[in-house]
Length: 129
Image (cartoon, rainbow, N blue to C red; front, side, top):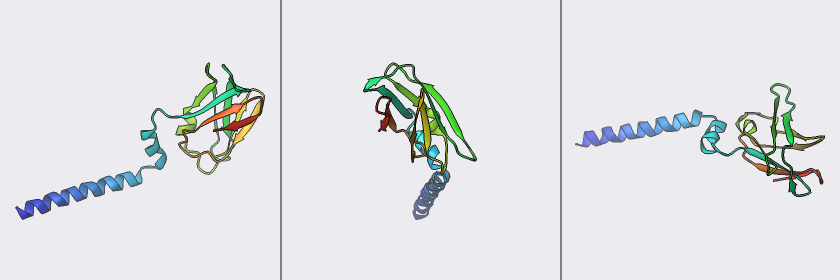
């Protein structure tokens, strides 16, 4: 009876250890994607507080090794989602230039796997989150 208990405890400990080892080897970005499946980076474009619909927005970083570029169009609420920005591993280069029509602005220090939401006002040329 005592041997059976020790055997069960040993199996449980080895299973826990195996789970910990596997979870430790998974990249942090992949771990975030599992829990944030429906959340992506979003940007709302407004003009003096009024949402701007059907506005093309381009986002890019000018990394030397792996550059990133994508675009989207705002919906009726001025919102545009960038799932590519949430899913991309961009390493050390975490500064991104967003171009809205003729105007551009820089967001610095975006986190990998970001699901942040920002608002850019065309009239004031200011962004906030």
